[in-house]
Image (cartoon, rainbow, N blue to C red; front, side, top):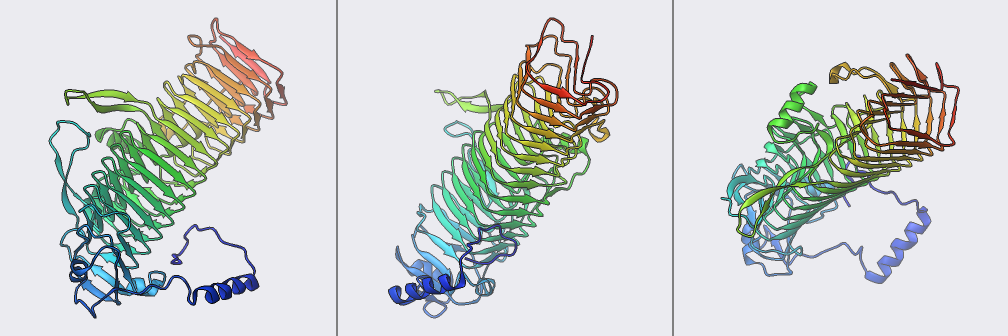
Length: 535
């Protein structure tokens, strides 16, 4: 495996003696390292160009390419072959074995039904400008296909497959999919590559998977890619599936600030990645929100944005000081096709699991949800610039076993969610304040703010400690809940919270004929008082 700088890979803790013995036994058994491969065709010894070698090859053969710069674009033409440098695991060899597209389309193309046995390993892939491809984003519809320029570095299209491993893919350009596009019912494995300094005019500056396609993105460094006038660095769109696992995704730039996007009934798994220091070109909140609305997103941007899709987001570090949210989740109207081939709309509710992540230093909120079904379990959500978790409008949310600490806004903020469970969390040292840059002037609920409803909340077994509010409710504030359901607050430890005005532990306002059920809570040492209620 290439030793890309700062790649987040597991490290084996094995003694030097044990490693030596393992290596010796492997040598005795195999007679070599096991990685050594012999080319059936050698470039330029047998053929001067890589494309000539591909044209002469047969399925199962290995084409080995000597170091040098090959100024050409190549097409695998349906052949299940391995194209490799002399040592894909040697960074120097990879850097010196260059396929330069010279601005003449996608550098590498798979579009003739190749399988995953078609592989490219150990090259520098650069100078691509993409290929014009027709796409119908709504499967099985009568819509007219649109032409898109996709896949600056690598294009995998039209029910084709490929494995892209151990390469450097840089300085490519396309309208969408600056480095790689997987489209039109295709699938790919993208593993252990350096993907950097690619650009798109609009979206997916690094990797795009679109229209019923699948991709596995593992063990890559994805950095310094630029989406000039678009949303994301990596996108899964239109009934596509993406597994994004154990990558270092950093220092990428988009216009509006989304690093990973899933949209229109896609399925996303984001696991064990470091996602940090990505940023947006548009700096102020209002302009960024307006920009999102103009392209059809009525939600703030985020490091990971889920729109009308399903996702599991697990064991990542998400730390983007310039992003509006760490994770942004929302439902939307999506097109569906009737039996007559006509396009109608339906409301797609995202189902999302957020588990065991560290989410920190985001500009607005650690996690934002709107019209969604979300489980937030065992995360560390800390030091975000405002709310730890924001739950809005008809969300069903389960927040369990998290540490929600040191955020510069309410630890948990709710506005008219459908149903909420807040159980066994540590909610500590959050500070509710007026947030001028967001136009938020309700500095209540340092630990928890349930505002204008929250149809039914169960707040059970939490440590709500040391939170502050510039207004009401240092620990918990319940405001304007008269038209909704009862809330249950029991078995909590609500201690040492502070409110500047009233209700250091719990403050409730305008409950009307609804009740707060206070079970066997420990509520003490809050300032100026433990419980306050106002009509």
